[in-house]
Each structure stands twice: as C-alpha cells, then as structure tokens.
Image (cartoon, rainbow, N blue to C red; front, side, top):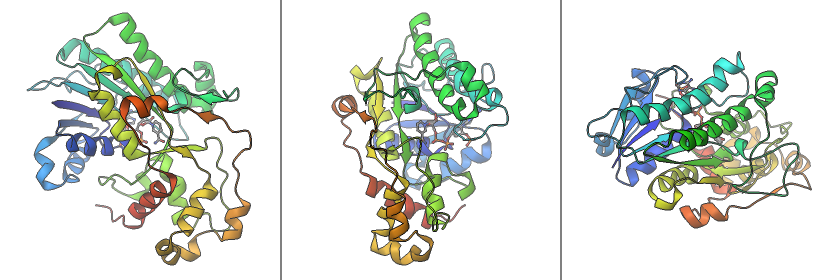
Amino acid sequence: GKVLLTGGSGFIAAHVLDSLLDHGFQVVVTARSDEKGQRIVKSIEPDLRKFVTYVVVGNIADDGAFDEAVKSDPPFDYVIHTASPYKLHWDDPIRDCLDPAVKGTTGILKSIKAYAPSVKRVVITSSSAAVLNPPNHREVYDETSWSGVTWEEGTSDMTKTYRASKKFAEKAAWDFVASEKPNFDIATINNTYTFGPLQRSLPNLEAMNTSNHRIRDLVQGKMRDEITPTAPVFTFVDVRDVALAHVRAMMVPDAGGERFYLVSGYFTNSKIAGAVRGDQEYEKLLGDKLPSREVTEKSEDFPEDHWKFDTTKSKKMLGLEYIGLEKSVLDTVESIVNFQGQ
Ligand code: NDP
C-alpha cells in the first residue's frame, strides 16, 4: 500500500514514518522545503530509502495547498495527517495556529475528495486537547469527551489557542465527513503529552518539538536548583505508541469513524528527574546538572484529586500495550545526549 504522510519533518511524523516502513508501506511525506524533504529521506537507513519520497507543500493554511500532493502514481491508499502547529507562543494566534490547524485539516480532506478517489482512510493526529475539558474535568476521561473551549477563547487567550486549534480542527474533520460523504472514512488519534526519542532529521536542538522541552531542560541543567511546575497536564504517552496507533488505526477495518484517546500513565517533572537520576549511567554522566534527590522529592506536584483515564478502546482495537514512563524518559534522554545535528 501507499501512504501520504503530512508534516514529515515533525517529531510524531518521523516515528509514524518508521512504523509505516516497518509495516512495508511505500510512503510520500510532505515537507515545507526541498531542504527539509531531503533531510527526511537522508535520515532513513539506506536499505529503506527507496520506499520514501517527499513532496513540497508550503503553508497548509493556503487554499488548495494539498491539491497536487494528493495526486500520485500509483495512487495513494491512505493519508495520515500530522502537520499542525504546536508551540506555546504565537505572534498571531489565527494566522499562526488556528488557521493552519483547521484549514489544513479541511483542506487536505477537500483535496483528497477532489483528486484522490483511491484513498480509503485518513488518520488525523488530533490531541487530548480536544478531549480534556478544563476546568470542569471529568472524573474519568475517554473518547466520548470533548473540550468545551470556544473559538473566541482560542483567539483572545493564548494559553487556550493551541487547545482550540486541535478541537476545532478535529470537529471540522468529523463535520466534513458527515456533510460531504466522501469515499474515505477517518479516524483520529487523540494522544496526550508525548515524549520519546528525537527525530533523526532534526537539524538542531532548538528545533525540538514542544513536548520534549522539559526533558531537554533537565538534561541541560536548567532544573538543577529548581524543578519547573508540571501543570497543566500530568499524563504522557510514548511517541512510538502514538506512531503505532496511527498505523493500526489506518489498517484495522473497524477503526474507521473512531477516535482513540492515548495515555500511558501519569508523570510529573519530579518523577522525570527521579527516573534520570535513578539510572546509574546518566547519574554519572549528567550528575551535577540534575536536581539533587532532595530538590526532586520536594518538587513532587501531582494533584491529589487528579482525573483518571480509560484507554480500553486503544488497547482492545489497536492492540496498544503502552511503554512506561521510565523507558520513555530514558530513551528520550539518550537521544538528546547523543544528538549530533546534521
Ligand atoms: P512538531 O512541531 O515536531 O511537528 C509539527 C509538524 O507540522 C512539522 O512537520 C511542521 O513543519 C508542520 N507544520 C506546522 N505548521 C505548519 C504549516 N502552517 N504549514 C505546513 N506545515 C506545518 O510537533 P509534533 O510532532 O509534536 O506534532 C505533530 C502533531 O501531533 C500535531 O498535529 C500536534 O498537534 C499533535 N500532537 C502533539 C502532541 C505532543 O505532545 N507532541 C500531543 C498531541 C497531539 P515544519 O517543521 O516545517 O515547521
């Protein structure tokens, strides 16, 4: 089978690409420039490179951005849409976040409907941001839950912009399928805060994806004297499980029309620091950059009345087993410590 994978330069997409190659798919990734596209192909081990090509797609908020990319010979069987901005600050929340998230999603669905009739399923990277509903948290979250964030809040309060972008992008996708009745169905992956090894195509540590920043900061000594507060999200999942979930959601017939909420377990920054210090090799290597045991213990900030999560659906339908916190953190640290740049 042949897959179009958007946002190829990204952290999650890089692992989705690895998983697709493991499963024997031919993949075309989208990248914003030739330079990025070439870097992605080069990051793949030589034996597998013949299964990967790239196509340049500029700003996904532009009308018809994907019109050419979805046309391919032989044609695509599936599309996985991961591209969407994930940052903590925006110069212009609509232009830089909400528009690329929402128009990027409806845009690719329109292009597929118009120009790629062979596509059977589109898997979209949504987020737990579209599931969780702060401050009125449920006791137990699962796929039946939706964020209540409004568009107005997303445009006026930058702390809510990203959440709104994911909620409205996902909602727009389900609305598109309901009203346009295309040939394909969709599935969404609503993964929570994602840790894991950096993508091999990353040009430098400054370009690292947002959710790994706290592990980078810890490794670089920025939490030695004081561990930053964990809030607002205390749940994590490993990127390799997120990647596998995308590929399984694409292949499992019954996954069409479904959302999948992905959580491995709880974390705090203090638990992350404890995991790194608890590893003899890193304790030796990073020793004086890490917070002391005392600082680590005193910084534990897991809230007593924290919400729970029910991941039965992803385990049953996608067969996920979920990598635990220690492995996820230590593998991330390893990839940061060994990072060379290209
Ligand atoms: P990255 O920042 O590593 O990847 C984002 C990707 O989207 C990059 O390839 C980026 O391209 C592309 N992109 C962003 N804006 C645009 C745009 N306007 N036009 C074209 N391409 C664009 O982040 P992640 O890998 O973490 O995120 C990937 C997806 O996963 C997103 O949809 C995100 O919302 C979702 N997600 C992430 C979670 C996490 O904790 N990491 C949790 C839940 C969901 P470029 O490199 O050129 O900027």
